Amino acid sequence: MSVYNELKDRGFISNVTDPEIGKYLEENKVVVYCGFDPTADSLHIGNLVPLMGLAHFQRHGHRVLPLIGGATGMIGDPSGRSEERNLQTISQVMHNAEAIKTQMEAILNFKGENSAFMVNNYDWTHGMSIIDWLRDIGKHFTINYMLAKDSVKSRISSENGISYTEFSYMTLQSYDFLYLFRNYGCTLQFGGNDQWGNITAGLELVRRADNGRVYGMTFPLITTSTGEKFGKSAGNAVWLDAEKTSPYQYYQYWINTTDEDVEKMLKLFTFIDVPEIVKICEEHKAEPHLRKAQTLLAREATRIMHSEEGLKSAEAASAALFGGDLKGLSEKELRSIFNDVPSSTVEKNEMKEGVNIADLLARTGMQPSKGKARSLIQQGGCYINNEKVTDPEMILNSSSLMHKSMLIIRCGKKNYHLVNVR
Image (cartoon, rainbow, N blue to C red):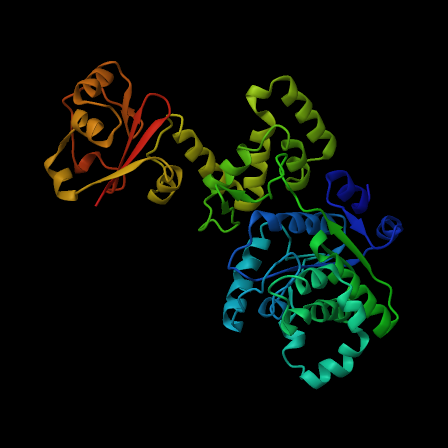
């Protein structure tokens, strides 16, 4: 199967600049690039779409150039925005670029034969003077052409308008394509639908400046079955950096995928063969309560991004929510797992003296009264750090703590409370 058919079957292709691009990719090994804005020191799972797309190109023998927008990131892309971005310093951009490459290494191969090569457009733009730019690049753009782009038109008609800085963004991104065409033989740009105007401008610049023929391909904006933008959990971005989104939280995002979305997500965010995905999803439809497809998605997506070790950590943390052993989990993992459960605080000195378990259940609101707490304990329904408590007169003290800083109370199967000891 050609990379074009692979990408098409998996749902990566929305628009192409030439209907013959499939034939072109089948007959040639090409150099393809895709840009990433270094606006933060971590990518998020919305960036996985282009990264996974580049990975498929690489697996089919094409060379991939992930591009960090060191220069364009200091300007800000007006596409899809109603107001101007905050401008970043060069030191911020370079710090973010280094962090992003580390995350890319989980998905792209930067070593050996046909290795990926990260480029930074700051390297070929920062030394150019404004005179050089206007004379050598600006002359190929007409104002009429630039004004016709949707990203510009929508901003000009908005209340905030568009600055000359952002208006010039199109010329910067277009020059990326020309530079990579000249220096790396790059003939294909891959990007999101919101980049269509910038991509076609790049094609036009290569044609005008060098009479070259290049191609563009866009992927769709990924949304859930409810129409929500993909990539957020409880309103927060799901980051690729394990320090920002733990492997457990990452795993949980995927395991909570709806039945309506799981086949699409398996095709986009794993390397499992499409026929195997279809088979798994058919099995899932027959027994949806087993959530086979979601489990496979969570396992594979977490393994790709966080390695086998990260997956084991995520599965151990997930098991903890269902009564699993907590002893092997770090304090950071425990706090990640129980981040959203109700919590309260007990002073260290009080914990040293000892706290009666029934008193603590009533005090934290886990039970309405001490009497109810004692009754629950006697019935075997209370757990401290996922270990059953049977004595209603039990005294909890410093030795009862996890990592000398917390207690995890569970009443019944899923009713948790985190006690922080400070």
